[in-house]
Image (cartoon, rainbow over all chains, first blue to last red):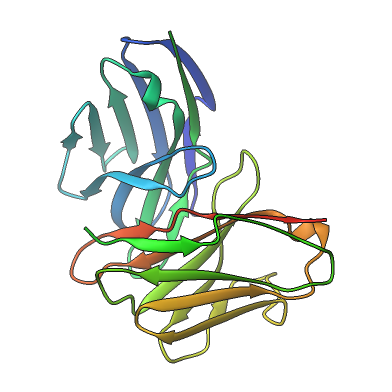
Length: 111
Length: 115
């Protein structure tokens, strides 16, 4: 069954700290993996997109990694800011067909 | 970049009435539009896929007569929730595939509350 599992479900960190979010998937055939940030009451906004051959991709303070062999990805956020408080969604594009969404990790950054 | 404008952002309607949600691609042509529903603390659930000029393809369990999708042009797709009931209250989001790349861009979402 094609699934995307994210952990932790929620996370609270202090402003300025780093954190890492995890994503494991069983989607096949694989096309690409995306990380999105979704603020409360808003649509998702793309952070990174990685294909099979890409191991890491950065977007400012966000760095995503992909291990296609173990089917794992992570999103690392450095020097967190209050505005980073949001839901982070891992999405795997099944080749030729659908986007498979994870349930997301809710990140709360406190001062 | 590719932008999808979604309106309205919030709507409250009475039970039994219909509500139309619009999604427009502002700077590109969206041949394919996706409609999602999201319940609190849940992931996005695909409702239907629409291609310009043809009938939408609905996911299993989604009533096509209740959720009417029109994709009559390359820049506009609409979702009409007909005879809305309180259980239809949810967050609805559209998404368009940006041709020539891997991108999917999302609208800002519509919070529907049926009272």
